Image (cartoon, helix red, strand yellow):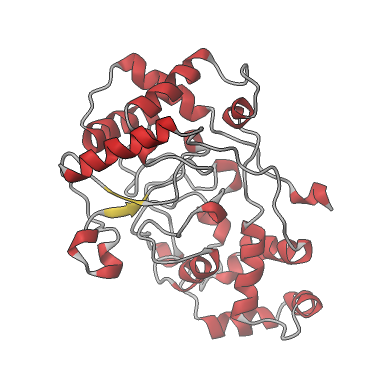
Length: 305
């Protein structure tokens, strides 16, 4: 009950403040040489043990930065344990991974490379492997010490920083173009705020800036235990990083375990179990229209050279 009261108070404060959602920046500051190298690495399956899995395998640029699978495929036919979150706009998340075990993109990038269910690569083995390729010259042109795991990660992160999606219809609406979104999307945004979704999904990433319990009003059966897996603190049981809702129409299936295929199902579920609300079909439809207005354009840093 105390948590529900806190959420209602937080919603009230947000609604009284200026817009609780802010537009994404239109560009990012990056080192272009590092980003170009990082892009090559991001798409290269040689970073995996069996040369079959790249970063892009689970975070496809034409699928909203995900792979649209409930669980992602790893090396040797292994499966991941949770749904792969989008790589788009991940630079704006306050932590990385569903359970927040990485504080930033640099820490995050180490995880999939060494995870036995994902790329299963030993870092020293990877360094030696890439030193036998045409990467050797490229690395020494940028890094004095050439190919090291830290430099590999540094380049990948520099590329991932470019994967932002500005100029969504909703961002343009916030910037003053009142015709940028439909009447249904406008109604959906008001419902999104009034019904309480905004308590967890706010800021420039419409999420990604706090933890929330999965099943606030009613308990939900789930295999993953969220933050508890990292802290072993009972108070963190079933708390997960709130995902960004940007480009959410592209990133199905939804939730940390990929249990729903459609936005309509997900909105209905979240309203029920997180907010204790039963929404009418037209309310759900309008909220989905708003969510679809959050789909942006992939930033092209090459044009900024």
